Image 1 (tube, rainbow, N blue to C red):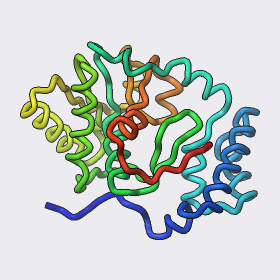
Image 2 (image 1 turned 30 degrees about the vertical axis):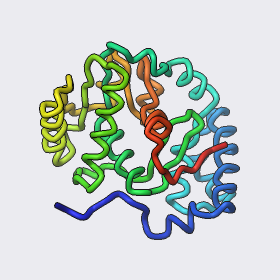
Image 3 (image 1 turned 135 degrees about the vertical axis):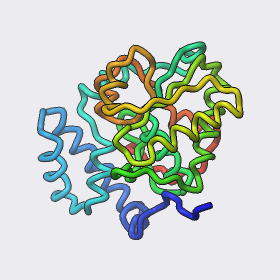
Image 4 (image 1 turned 90 degrees about the vertical axis):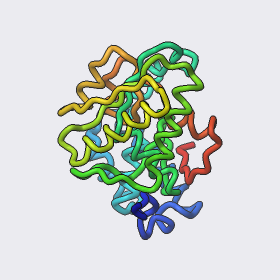
Length: 237
């Protein structure tokens, strides 16, 4: 057993732990939304806003995750489905996006609610996925969601190029077999494109996927309230 988790980085309490820093971030998100809605490129907008509020690198990363243009927000809202729409459906889940976010959240890392209502974190896969102490708990939470809402089938999509993607796929399939869940897991070279083009309902908080998919559901937001999870959540409003 390893002792890894996806908790806070050193310095995150300084960047996100005070009312002053959170207030600054909220103002920055407002400015960012204004600029994105007037077609400023994301990089230029975040540089401008970052300089204005003297944001550090991780604060800018959070700012980008929380921000979107008016058009993006409107379109994402139109495509968001309710929990009642999931019954007897096949759902496609953005494997690394969801599991790493849950691992971060369960490790008490800071997570951020975007203007679109999606929760995002500051970690990610950098070529290699490593299982952590919270991995199994993350899978259990997804299983609980799957059972409660009578989902017909859940298809996990993982990035084939990521090292250890085969291992996490195996873990998910073994868990499903032991618990008699109708789950599939698939490795894709371009999972974002695959999910965006899928005809099913998507679970992801990846902005590009949300902008391009047909329908999506906000699983992390649902789990936080349904399972009453304790989270270090920074909200935009």
